[in-house]
Length: 284
Image: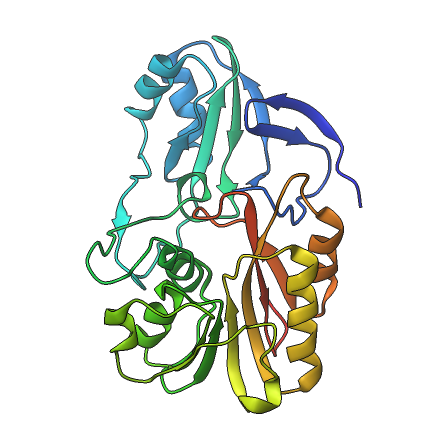
């Protein structure tokens, strides 16, 4: 189903109809209203009548918007610890279209301002910042393996995702032609296979609870790899980064999205890539 864009204001697109699952949308505003306002106090009253906490997406009139925010409960931007509980209270968001017109959404699809999560990062243990993708997937979206599960991380070097999977208590099969960082390889409950992820056969690994991949490859090659493991019947759940070149391979992305019990999201930590999740049970 296509989306009819009524107007665009920087990164903000005002669309017609019901909210849809738009992959690259960092956040979706719901029940949007465009209203006239006569003063800062009047704008604040409009907000307070519609939601408890507010954030502001800056288009213009930034100083005026800050003065409005001073008069309403503000949704604070904070840094979260890994797996810290995320607030469930809806956040309203607004933008000033002009000195006399405000666009208001009393609720969005994400409970954090602008759909973004900021972490208290671990600057000591992980060998790269790629680990933040799994931190976000596990903390904000809630897709994660339970302790004791068997997981595989393909294309794992230098070991950021393997490190996260080990820290949450899973037994990790880590696969790459290049070696893991020594401090990751020395951790318990990691079985490292120094070989190509594309040459490895599922039957040589056995039953898995989760398949993870942040491997650098074209989307169609990743789809071939994923389908091999899905067809084996040996994996229940998947979480993979789909990395794009130019132009973006929308065709393959939608093939991933069409797989039953799947979801494709653009994480705060994703750049020109998205994350595909596939679970054994239907995704809510």
